[in-house]
Image 1 (cartoon, helix red, strand yellow):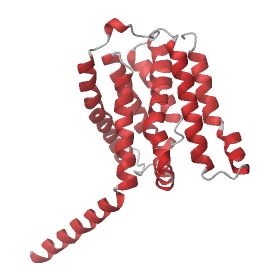
Image 2: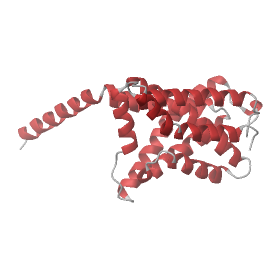
Image 3: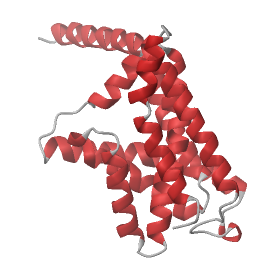
Image 4: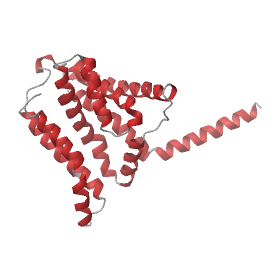
Length: 236
């Protein structure tokens, strides 16, 4: 593992656990939305530290000369969004039809509720969070494993860890499938920015739909059901 990668992993773990001390501290200071404020602060701090550490870390496991061009990276980033959604849909279908797992993620629903109450939290779920996760799970963990093993071993191991860290164990398959997709994008393009953009775009779309357009979608579904019932009545 590269020199500073252990420091990056420790930074990520400390960030995840820091709320145990930070949130009560903000509560004692009577700061509104202590969970949200501490999340933004801790995630942003961790990102700054990681980016600083990566400046002095060589590209692992890929050299700069092997990267795709900027234009190709844009194309793969766009395609990556659809690939991530496709993998998520396939995994969800397997969960429902084979494993009998109900759709819907408690983890996602919880994050959406927090974002609805405090829109600033969207910065964490849509921007900072995906960047941190791609640095930790794709560049550090997957990249280190990929130097020693083939894609499938490195991809599955890193993706299972990525899935487990979301603490939504009933949907491990979905998170693992997404992790494999992002790992593929990383290997295919040799640019970490590609899975970062795909991850950020997917998260942003899900959050915006659920936070700002959920009521409109429910109303459209209601009107569609009413129209179907009316049309069905005409032919009954």
